[in-house]
Amino acid sequence: MKYTNSFARSIRRTKNQFIDFITNKGKQNLIVIAALVVLTAIFALLNPNFINKNNIVSMAQSLAPYAVLALGVTFVIATGGIDLSIGTVCIASAVIAGKLYMLGMPLWATIPVMIAIGTLFGYINGLLVAKLKLPAFIATLGTMMFARGISAIIAAIPNIFFPSGTWFNKAFSNANGLPTGLFWIIILGAVCMYLMYKCKIGRYILSIGSNEEATRLSGIDTEKYKIIAYTFSGVAAGIAAIFWAASFPTVAAATGNGMELDAIAGVYIGGTSSAGGTASIAGSIIGNIMLVIIRSGLNFVLAKFNLNLNSTYVTYALTGLIVVAAVLMDVLKNKNAAKVKIETEKDKAKKAKLLALADLENEIDDVIASDIGNEEKNIKIAELEKQIAAL
Image (tube, rainbow, N blue to C red):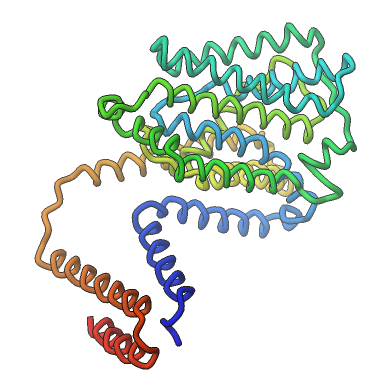
C-alpha cells in the first residue's frame, strides 16, 4: 500500500524537509547552480573544446586546492571573521615540505608535514584573534606576510620540485584521466557538513557568528571555538597544499597571494553570510566551481575569437561583480528578515491551512504506526487523504 510502510513515510518527510530547505535557505545555491548551467552552455556554444575531457580534468585539478581552502575558511567566516593567510600558508606548506623532500625525506612524509604546517598557522591565527583580541583582518594579514617570507627563506631557491607521474599525483590529482581530486572534495565536504551541522562545534561556531556576546553569556567558551574555527582553516590550507603539489609539481616560493581571495569569493557566492551566523558548505564548493568555470571558459572564448584581453584580469572583474551581488543578496535577505511583518488575513489563513495539513500528515503517521489491521488502516488513511485533498 502507498502509506503502509516506513519507506514511504521517509520519502514524504524528506520531500517536505527538502522543500523547506529550498524555501528558507537554498535559494542562493539554486541561483548559483542555474548560473553554472547557463555559463557552461554559453562557453560550450562559443567554443566546443571547453567541454572536452582534457579541459574537464584540468578544471578539476585546479578546483581541488581552492575548494579545500574554501571549506576551511567557511568555518572562520561563519564566526564573523576572515582569514587572509590561507593562500600563502598553502604555498608555504608545499614549499617547506617540498624542500624536505628534495633533501631526502620520503614523499609520503610530505603529507603530514604539509598538514602540520597549515594546522600550526591556523592555531596561531586563532590565538591572535581569540586570546589577544587582534582584529582578524590584521592578525591574518600578518601571518599571510610571515608565511610568504618564511617559505622563501627556508626554500632559498626560486622553485621547489615535486615528482610527477607517481602515486602521489594519481592519488590527489589525476589517475590516468580520472580527476581524483573531485572524490577528495566530496569526502572532505561531507566531513565539513557533519562538523558544521551535526556537531556542537558547528552549532557553537554559527552561534558565535550570530551573536558572540549572547553565546558567551550562555556559558559557551567562545575563545575556544574561535580557535577551533581558525585551526580548521589552517588544516584545510595544509590539505590544499597536498592537492596543489600533486597538480602543479613546480611550486614557486614566496607566492600564494590571491588564492585566498578566490577561495573566499567562492564562499560568499555560495551563500555563507559575510556577517557570520550562516554557512553553506555545499555552497562554498559550488561557488568555487563557478569561478573555475568562468576562468577556464574565458580562456577558451578569448582564444577562439583572438581577443587581445588577459583572461585573468577579465576573471577578476567578473568575480568582483559576482561577489558584490552575492553579498548584496545576503544583506537584503538579512534586512528583510529583520523587518516586523504584519500578518494579513490571507497570511493567517495560509498558515492555518499549512498547520492543518501537517496535523493530518501526522495523523497518517500515527495510523501507520498503530497496531490495527491493514484493512482498517487503509480506510482511515483514505479518509485522511480526502481531508488533505479538500484542503
